[in-house]
Length: 300
Image (tube, rainbow, N blue to C red; front, side):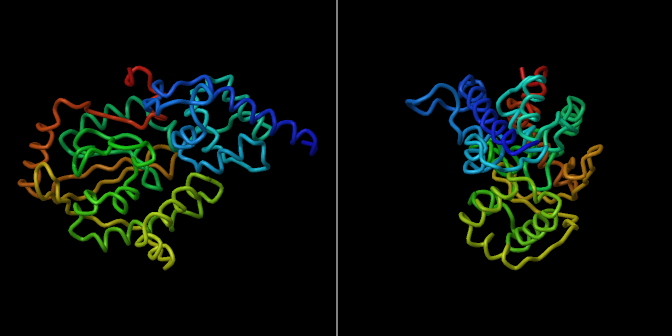
């Protein structure tokens, strides 16, 4: 594409994104209205939050700056803006000069079958999690094991964010120092596969800014790919629970896994069964809004 064509495409991309953003109301994506709005529809920061990217980066994209979004980020923006298949194709053509490629590994991989599996695993806590600790979907036992995972913004539906920035979650880890150090080492190990993904940059920048402990661990540059076989959690609802992890990679998506927390002892199993009873009035399975938008039957 010639330089003049690239400039025109970037300008058209910005106009297209603004037009799609302005047609969506906050309540359509589960956000509060937030007082008076100078323009209709969503704010830029709300789109960035829903897509899991930095506000500055998304603003640059709307302003037509010369940046290169990854396929996963384009699809995340398409879901956040609720684009249909034709609009998604148009977004790809404007952004990278070609049609949409493979499905986004962080959202499109979650299917109704996966959600049914999560529901069927109750009362065992289970979730679908990405390399950067985003929780794409979870059953009720996982959601409420520590505290309500769905409480707060979409960007906070992330185990890294909760462990470092939420005091309730921090108190739930008896081995907090070891557990959080391992989480940061795992994040850094996975980073080279996602260097073109601004959502990763946004997460690291946020954590370095808001958590002195994360900043210190990140500077150490420790890497580890293995995960602890067991973990103890202090649940506010049912007390101490010890679990061992079973991790299953989802098909064709090396950065997304299904995690099941199996009880270690009969007493742990009884506590998890009690937890399921306590949250029986809640939805059995919940998903991130961007994922739910792809599952109209289950999200209705």
